[in-house]
Amino acid sequence: MRVITSKSKNAESFYISKGYINDKGVSTSVIVRKLGTLKELLPEHGPTREDVLAWAKEEARLETLKYKQQQEEKQIKITFHADRQLDYDKQTFFRGGYLFLQSIYYQLQMNKICRKLKLKYKFKYDINAILSDLIYTRILEPCSKRSSYKAASEFLEKPSYKLHDVYRALDVLGAECDLIQAEVYKNSHHLGKRNDKILYYDCSNYYFEIEQEDGSKKYGKSKEHRPNPIIQMGLFMDGDGIPLAFSLFPGNANEQTSLKPLEKKVLGDFGCQKFIYCSDAGLGSEAIREYNHMGERAYIVTQSIKKLKKEEKEWALSPQGFKRVSDDTPVDITKLSEDDKGLYYKDEPYTTKKLHQRLIITYSPKYALYQKSIRDKQVERAQKMLDSGKSKKNRKNPNDPARFIGKIAATKEGEAADIQYYLDEEKISDESQYDGLYAVCTDLLDDEVSDILKVSEGRWQIEECFRIMKTDFSARPIYLQDENRIKAHFLICFLALALYRFLEKKMNYEYSCEELLDALKAMNFAGIQEQGFIPLYKRETITDALHDVCSFRTDYQFITKSKMRTIQKKSKGKE
Image (cartoon, rainbow, N blue to C red; front, side, top):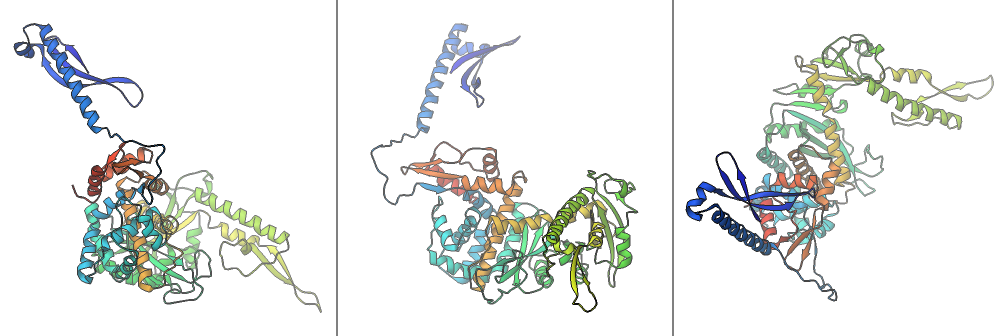
């Protein structure tokens, strides 16, 4: 360190400065201490300027010694021996990404929910440790319950329970599934205001690695087209993409019947009374619309144009009457170019037996081009099927290219009918009428069209919720057999999704699911000779953001054991 001076018109000031090289490799300096002006220092350290300067240099020397001593105290000296083997059964690898999930877990006060369960059931094992570890491993390394216990053994905080306790806890978690969901929703308000004025609903199914039906595991229409028995999940999600509640129902049940029981739970146990229900057409039947027209609820659901009555369908397919969504300017959509990026609409009252509704038809040239390109490829495949002599099969998939193959029976006198196949141009033309068109039905008669469409467009997030659970959290296939434990498995997946979504929200949605999960999985540590830990991950913008939102840091060159214990306490909201 050195002494520097600064002269102004009326005074000369003395400072102690320290030089260093910044992150860009450039030499720079910083003021460590201001000693005072010459006028202030002369009475005590004078009588001359040289005397003051000599005193200032001595102060700089003492500051240098003090700084070196502090640096030496921070340095950890560890000796390694090239000829010494590793100790048997000594763990040196530790997973640390769970600390950031733990921060959200404790902000949701899920430890207090577990405390209630323990008081109710009087068990001796630590259900809070079991539930938290099952959630963390479902996010960081999704696997079986046995493998999850093994993965949790690599956490910085080892499990305080045994494997058999995990299976006992599953029975309790399954039995108290509804209570836990309601409590988590109430506690979630500690993390900020929930966007629960818009609720999205959808269903998906999950298959089992079994061959025969058993309990609620039934044969049904599997989204993976597997022959295995399945179970279905209905999921409510709020306007920010954070899951709200779920229910399970048999694989062979109609998904429309799943809504009312779960929505009644949301209305009663959760206290949500005023919201807009939003879903796709499959979960927007007339009965469901009527149910969500009651009280302070409303609905926005997609509408199949093909299922409209003749008069409404003709109006929907007509190119007349469209306006630009952004400014309500009338537009002739037949004159729009294929590369137009705008969105256009028209709307009219739509009355059924019991409901006065509003039917909104939108048109997007970009979407029209996409649908046309997909259909053109399907037509090519249909033509190849004809050229190869393959006859049309009975297929139920509405997107199968074989739907464009027509057949006609050609007969000659005295001969059996000969079936001939051809490319059905009429069918192709009929489907092209719907290119770029999309319909929404709502009982919000006075709201702006742009606001209604914005709500409807948010449905993609619930599809992403199911994708994350199935793909990133490996919610299926399911190997459990007991109904209660199956419910517990889905509860863990649901809570894992909630924790992840809250963390994503805290980080302002700046990172994709893949980026965030990869960062958490990489945040591991090496234990060094019982003295502390060295981070094994690369410091990046995303790791800085994780540390910032969770209010602790693990990105030091070396972390002592006592410092790591402090970090663990901070991740649980304890100082």
